[in-house]
Image (cartoon, rainbow, N blue to C red; front, side):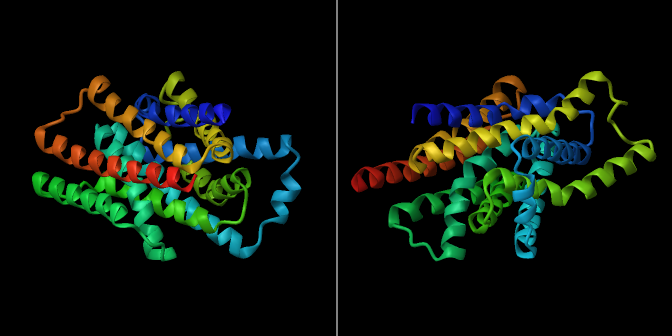
Length: 289
């Protein structure tokens, strides 16, 4: 249990510091960063499959329906990565953190819509409060917080696909990156040949950051997969707020992004919704025990 909790904190802590890592690549187009992330993640995962001698088992699992499920999951993950990297480098770390604060509530809503899960009144309340926060932010700024909503819904639908996906975490992530590997590599080669490629041209540090983006992506995912097997979901549900909290603090304290009153009210509404949701979940868990 203690080991699993440590793995969970390590995974969400690493995700929380992602803005600093990807901000170091601010001179590289977001699409190139995302495709490098896909390519190098696949390389790392393929090496892991070979080291663990699971390549044949992985190959045997490649049924047409399975490939289609993971193709959809891979596309959703790529969209999430692309929006996140663009947001960080465009100075929207706070709004991206808002997306990951909203994400758990989006996942609950998707469970109701697609799996006909029944919610208690105390579970509907935070969803309504989160919706009110989005409406308030949209009215305050004159537009929807599309970055936050894109991140929340892309990752929410990604989780939905993973719920019906049949493979283990390692095999599943390997397949997700495998189906995107050739398009991503093709785009990077195209960028290289037309002179817009950043790899090996943007300096030593950005090149290393791009090359290590696969390792940086895979490590927290594997830590999370290990934690998920050892830690109760109620505990994991609370720890998950470490990542957006760190991102929020980095946005305010490190990158000095503006935090006017309107944005503060929106965040307070979301935090209140999460507090209600977490309290209800913990209370119900104690009643079951």
